Image (tube, rainbow, N blue to C red; front, side):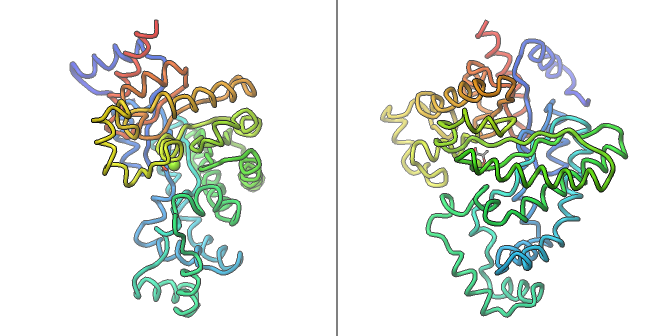
Amino acid sequence: QPELSGDFGTLMQWADAKRRLKVRTNAETPLDCRTAREFGAEGVGLCRTEHMFFDGARITAVRQMILASDEKGRRAALDKLLPEQRSDFVEIFEVMAGLPVTIRLLDPPLHEFLPHEENEFEDVARAAGIDVETLRRRAAELHEFNPMLGHRGCRLGVTYPEIYEMQARAIFEAAVAVAEKSGAAPIPEVMIPLVATRRELELMKIVVDKAAQAVFADKGRTIEYLVGTMIELPRAALRAGEIAEVGEFFSFGTNDLTQTTLGVSRDDAARFLTTYVEKGIYARDPFVSIDVEGVGELISLAAERGRATRPEIKLGICGEHGGDPASIAFCEATRLDYVSASPYRVPIARLAAAQAALKAK
Ligand code: PEP
Ligand code: MG
């Protein structure tokens, strides 16, 4: 593994000798994965696949899929996306060379995928063979007043399972291809977003397992993998005991968990949170450092309930807080297995994890 050099490298080695928490990265491009590995990341903790769908050449196919009126229409668009998605994962698995890679299935606020400009509608019309008027009507039907609480995360997978099926196929086909080429079998951890109930996760796990079996039968080779969930809604934290009957790992999505626990929009919070911190209502910005008494309590409770059901359950955090030293101290105290931070925060996370471990002794 590439290592940081000089005094900084030495300091990092000291830190690594002391820390218990693993440090992973939030990354969805090969470049970010490579950067994170150079900084010492021990895996990918969050690969946000929706970012891959915004890619210039693909967005028309994505829009075609979202605006399709039936499964056949969606599948036609997904067929175009499958080879591209497969090569996304091949590249990431290659860079990560056998380290665990948590791939989160699609979690878009739907409005970000809808076309707005006339030429965008025309592109989709051409690709799908549907007239612009019909597409406009369909886009209007899909309008949501509050997309962040809307048809997002696994809700999209529940209503359109073929999307997650395509992504799971792409993951397993890529994993098999890389295993055969390099000998280092990738360890995919397939993560379902915005789960609130056990049944949602169960339905999505069936889709993923089916795709895995189909690919393994087709290729004559199997790959070890896990299926788990984000815990990013208070209901999921409360029901973690039964969710762990299905999920093999939890990753705490503290961005959404903070938003939904505090009832504060993560996109608009800056306007008043500064005042809130000044007046001592919150000790720190809760979107930067875990609000230990609220969000933290939900995390501790979910960890405890998850472990009671499945003692070996893997627990991590992949919200922005995963790169924040105070939050990392909380993660150590809660005995999570890993934190996941953006590539440039990986060294800070390694140091903070060591400090937290030393303090915990
Ligand atoms: C989260 O909610 O904390 C998370 C990691 O997911 P995203 O930021 O993509 O919603
Ligand atoms: Mg989230």
